[in-house]
Every structure is written in C-alpha cells, then in structure tokens.
Length: 497
Image (cartoon, rainbow, N blue to C red):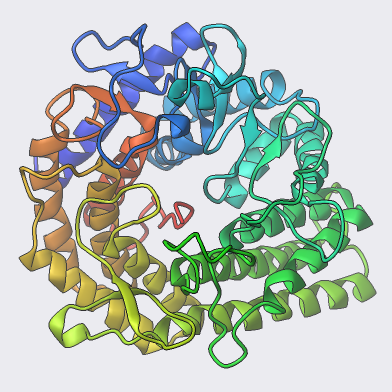
C-alpha cells in the first residue's frame, strides 16, 4: 500500500468509527468521544488552554463542527465507499427533520448551541462554562454553511431552510441606526437589546447573505432579497474608504482595549469569500435555469428581467468582495522575513499583531488559515499577490514544523495540510503535494494513532469543537490529490473562516 492509500485508509477508519457511533444517536455524531472506549463520556473532559467551554457541544452533536467530516464522506463515496453517502444523508435527514423545529427557526448549531443527543433537545453550551447560567440557548453561526449543505437540508426539509432564513431577522437589533448582533435567541422571538458593543462581526454578515441567497433562490421571497441588499450595504458603508478595511465590529467602547481602534483583516477576508462564493452560486443558478431540462422549483431566476437583476447583484458582490480581499494586501507584510500581519491600528497604520504558525486560540487563528483564503482569492481574481502570500506562508511551515511540546488544536494541523493541498490544486507544482504528504505523515503520528483523531496532541479524546473534521477533510484531500491528480473528488473547503 502506497503512502496516499495509507492516509486515505486512516481517514476511512475514522469515518467507519463515526458511522458506527451514529447508530446510537439516530444518525448524528457525538461531539466528544473517548479514544479508549470509543463512547461519548458522561462528563465533559477538561478544556485545553485557549478553548472555551461555552463553545463546546456536550452531550451533543454540532452540525457546524461535523460538516467537514460529512463533506469528506460525500467525497469518498464518489469513489468506492458508497455507504458513506448514506451515512451522511442519514445524519442530515435526522437534523433537518428532527432538530430544526425551533421557535424562531434558527438552528441549534454553531458556537454556543447544539443538539443534545442524550436528552433529545436543544443543547446550550453556556451552562458548560457557567454554573449560574439560566438564559436560553443562543444562535451564533460560527462559520459558513456551504451551499452543498443547504442543498442537502433543503432536499430533506425545504421548510426548515425557509424558517431559518426567516429566523435570521432576529439578529437585527431594534431602533436606528440599523445594527445587528451575531447572537440571537433560538427559543424566544425577540431581538437583541441595544448595548455599548455592537458585536456585529462582518464575517457573520457574509454567512447570513449566503443563507438568505439560497433561501431566496428556492422560494422567490422578496423579503429575503431585501435582507441580502440590506446586509450587503451594511458593511460597505462602514469600510475605510481608502483601503476597504473593516473593524471587528462597528461599535466598540474605548475601554475594550483588546480590539478598540484595530483593523480586522480576517473579518474582511471572511466576508469577501462569502460574497465571492455567493456571486458564483447566483451565476450558476442563472445558468442552470436557462437549461431546458432544469427541474421546476428554483425561483427568482425564471425570467429575463429577474436574471438581469440577479446578475447585477452578483456583480456588486464580486466587486465588493474584491475590494475587501484587496484590503488584506494593503497590510505591511514582510514576506521575505516571514512577518504576516494580522491587524493594524486604524489611526496610525502601525502593526498591532502578527500571525504565528501554530497554536490557535479563541479569537486568533494561524497563518495557514489566512493563506488558504488567499489561495481562494487567487482563484477568484487571478491576482498573483494572493498566491505569493500563500506560498510564502507555506514555505514558513516547511521550516517551522509542528512543535511537540506546545498546545496545538487539531484544526491547526488540518489547516496546514489543506494549505499544501490547495496550492497543489492551483499550481500543479509537485513540491506542494510532496510537502503535504510529508506533513500528513507527521501529523498522523501525533494526532491520529487511534481510530479517531485527538482533539489536541496531549489529550485522549476526540472533540469536534477542536476541528478533527478539518483534519479528516484535509487528509482525504491531499491523499486523493495524489491518487486522482486530474480530478480530485475532495474540493477545497473555505467554510472555516
């Protein structure tokens, strides 16, 4: 068995394990799994440094964590393991039909909510961190819901998709000027109150635009289209006019010194990718609607006038995405010396933070994450500067390899492998494939000596919040890129942004 086959074999063993565990939970995957017993533990294991218990999902299942493993199942199923598609469908059908009938329509997924598989109800992450917490579960999107995922949920329960798009309206705060919050109640029909901080992170606005766009194209509801335009203009009017740079939030009190007065390039990059992907989805929908054998059921693209409106909307998204993405290039990076800037001060432009290779914590990712988005931006725009940044970061990982004694969540390892796979995908330079395979072997020895990946190298449990699904997806991507270089069935996934 050659190296890519061994790597793929490890991935399949993990997918087999998750499939078997899903039998106990009506198709859902438990979020935390003891690597010795391969069972969901009764008690929540200790968090690792940099992790928050209010972000974890126990005793439960979190679709926003599991989407990477599910995408891996669908990709591998396209080759030989057809049963993986059935397992993934069972998961999503169970979620779409059984777990989405909430008061607001918002799903129990994301950063602070999940589906409690032990008690078969909405799960609330905040009591895992605070014994005194009595408030109901909170919706926070956490990361992007890719369009393939929306297609699947719509296949199993169209109404849950429509209700979710309706529920996103509860993220808007009452009053003027318009403002939204990334947090909203799942089981109470009320808007977030006005506060000193807005907590309206730009990347969440991009997630909502994706959600509303999918729902609009399936339903033709004009209120969803209005929401898209409202959110699209929201951040455009708040950008720095010279650089298109964005803050972390639109309203931050000066006493919040950790973020006050700082740019947030990561937020602008995330919003940019959401707009690029949405524009592509709109144009693909228009093209499919023009085919004579197109099935009925896709609204909003049925006549020439509406197609012109949608193409104009897609073009606006593309132009603004390009501006937001380009804002990252205005930062004072020093690629020759491995200085990758993560934020600056709006008033002076001085560097306020740089990216590191390993050891992400809440609120701070690693350089590979930004580099991967740059690969995506290069594909969207053809701008060589994005590719140059990504290649510079990848070269940095060739010299600064995984530290054995540091606390490094498994998501970091998966993101690095995915960076090498993405670079090979766009450049076809074998150096990136070879480095990806070498890194994969190294990572497997540290994180993946059991049937499932460790959430972190020094713990004995799988924790979906730490990103093992990202590792499974990236391992499959690099292995299948080697085995099927002309048409890898695992495509790059930029939804963890």
